[in-house]
Image (tube, rainbow, N blue to C red):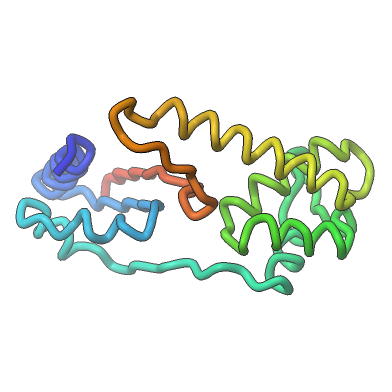
Length: 166
């Protein structure tokens, strides 16, 4: 069990002893649920109300997502991604939502005010891969065999804690 697991258990215990409702949203890799298998987290595990696993997006789902997502400026992206750009984003991301999002955001930066083209997507995918590889090489221990990170390792991991008084 790592220190963040212990901290989460401490927060849950503090909320329970003070009779405060605690809502926690945890987002992470598919291995996240197994972290709650520890006996010391059994009380916390019992309070989990829902667990959802996001499947990979299909090509159609990727296109629909790209058309409905918001741009960095907060405006809808409707029409900003061409069909070919949407197809290429899906192929580069393998339908993984975090990778779709990373490539889409970088593609919009590359395109500026223009429609996102396959060329913008290729440039964005290259930049996202380079960034991922830099992170992988910086976090790889020197005594471990070098392994290239694949797109399934790019996930969003964070927690939101919300303590409310009754």
